[in-house]
Image (cartoon, rainbow over all chains, first blue to last red; front, top):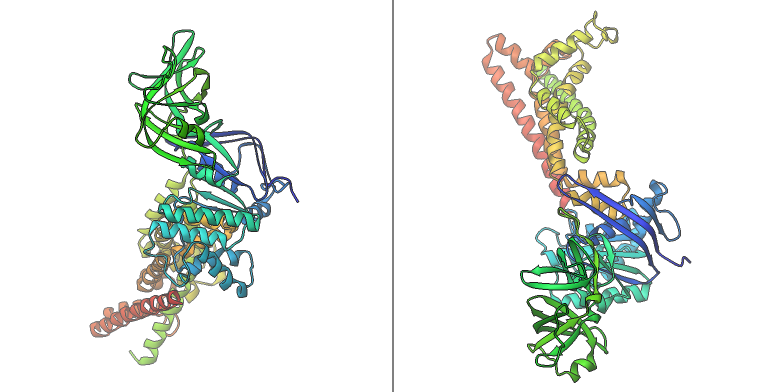
Length: 354
Length: 216
């Protein structure tokens, strides 16, 4: 058995379109069998591009992409074989004209799965996405959410080694989205299917994934895009800052000029109830705000969203949250050191693709 | 005009034009698939030539093939002039750009995600091509039927390359031309009506067949 399903080294991909250009650079990425990997980042970060590369629908311009220990791009047959092992469900899935069953059996026919097996596979795949008995329904007139579930069932029916999902719960209501997450966990655990999915939702990524890959402007960044800000850097020679909003500065050390994107690790931000000393001083990053969302990623860690002049997401121990008496709608102060601000590189001009 | 002669003229029309539509479709649809799926230098020129070719008068194509197939022409040795085969060849060249043009438009309208989805689900490039064709099947059928209608209703090529030989290359349109020249307008109108009924029948047959297949 291969140690890794995907092994990427120094991989680069560049897209040059008539109106925009985009490049994705990944020094290294390893995805193991049965692992769930979340790709998190803002629009234009490169999540979809990376999924296209992992689905072998786009070819890296340079570097090495190994799949199950081999080169998927060795020849035409190997690419088709790899695509049959790693099935992508896109954000806006396309359903072939006909019935739900026509769509679900498409990939089974390609793989020469005996027709006797089809009904059982279709039934179980549709049951997983809560569309039991929909085999004979025409795909015309399905809502975006239903189409997304049919597309997911179409992939699940194939029982692939790797399931690649581009924002799988984007068109689905919250309750069903959570149930779909449970399905993905179950598929990963019971069948050993590797799942790679993209999301804007940091808490979904935290809940579901074994590992999270944060992307920004086509590069791996250390932290979530939740605390990701862009602006033109100014400097006084000792320290630099950007103004994501007029009059609101984020300071960081060193001398930096030009348009930059920076991120702040949610765990590096300290949170205080308003009125509690936050040691304000010039050059310190101190912001006021109000708690607009609270959730827990696991039993011990809470995620808090505080919105004021800027919106930040803060990760802190649940115990600390309780000790400080921080609750929803409470006014808070938050602080982080300039050293916690990571510059993730100049922003690519133009209109990069997601 | 006796019944047997009429039946033979109808048969010649159906045979030559039906064959021309099949041959032209076999060339035009893959060509349209190629054009619709790729961007290359000179593509606009190819489309421009195709559009211009669509407007070519039937007598010009008839004349061109007449010069090629006549005894002194480069293909005179084949002995095709004044045969049904010559009529079919001429009609293929007449309707080829029409089917290419209609099919190209039909295939361009297929959602680009159709091919990508087929590939993502494990189709080979050839299978993905078939998926695109299947998604556009109604529009492609219209393209083929339009080509057939153009071929069966033309008179210039049939007259010049077939020669309107009784019981051999005389088809419905050359019969209409002959009857009209003889002053037998009533026969001409009846033959015209027969032509329309045939076209209507074929259209109904194909569309009913497709609808039935879709319900399966």
